[in-house]
Image 1: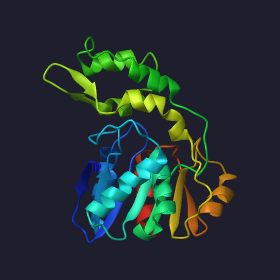
Image 2: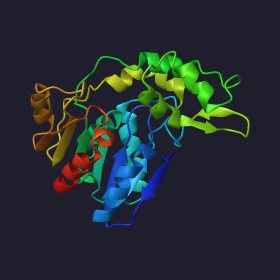
Image 3: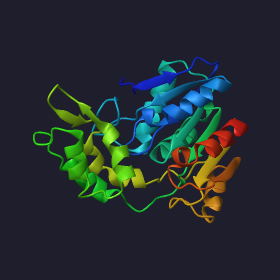
Amino acid sequence: MKLLSSNIIGNGSKDLIILHGFLGMGDNWKSFAKKITNIGYKVHLLDQRNHGRSFWDKEFNYKILSIDLYNYVSYNNINNPIIMGHSMGGKTAMKFAFDFPEKIKKLIVVDIVPKKYKESHIDILKGLSILDFNELKTRDSVDLELSKYVKENSIRQFLLKNLYWISKEKLALRINIDILKNKVSEVSNFDYLTKNYKGNSFFLFGEKSEYYDKNDDNIIKNFFPNSKISLIRNASHWLHAENPKDFFNEIKSWI
């Protein structure tokens, strides 16, 4: 059995597992994790397969990502954790709640709806996949090359967190870009809607998010009947980074 890599922060008596989004890693949530430990939580920042420091594998869909999470929870004897997921991680968390409701205390979903979206990230994936690390020897040179495909500096800086030195002289990406670019349809998809989860659920969206509109409330309530939905002001998809104060206060109040 292959186990996901994790960064565990805090030593509280209650467990919170956080699942990052597409092309991210658990450490994207380190600032939030440090805050939440102050109210008695041990926070598990997981790297999903083909991301961060976790293993690479050709299989990649929400069914298998849910099983990865089950294996992590079971191996570490984690009882009644709160599971929180952002974007792709939110879909993994929802699938896990459908499949293993007995393994979860509460569910938190950040800026994603249980539905199929149009495929996106095409330019980002193209830019990442053509990076030639035999030629690109510095972070700045990688950034310059990537800027041909990704104009927004903030998005490039997020993506460049995946850079690391595979040797003293060569850079590499922690993400398995070859698999992920071929599985992007799996990320956009969500075809597990014959089930529902009746446990406590909390959905948070940025008020400016492109991933949510008011009509989605009915979809959420259909599959998560015992759910609360909140909007975070002055924020879009990266609400935990764009308005960390309100985001933290909402989570703290609910859990």
